[in-house]
Image (cartoon, rainbow, N blue to C red; front, side, top):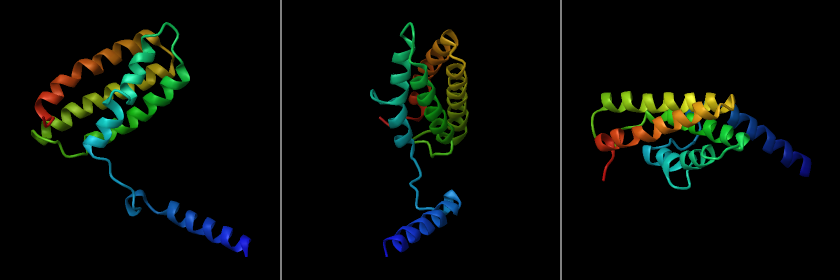
Length: 136
């Protein structure tokens, strides 16, 4: 009986995973969700930026976090902007996502100076996007 329950669980899990992602009951991340995971004081970006200030960053941690951040920010442009026009939103979020991907690449190469430069570029871009698209 126990084996039958395990088999049933495996079959149901395989069936669920075989469905396209849009067919699953997965939550679509909103702008607030993404920016919370990336930009909050305990988020990915502050953690990466802090680590990059170190003389010898923990690269495995930075690589994992930049990979996750890059994935999240690639989805950001598909979200509806909280305010402002969609064309500006797409342009600004694409640039931010491109920088996140470049940061991921620099982290993979363990290129500290490049990672620091890209991180600063990302930080400098926040106000430009927030002034146009962030609800106060």
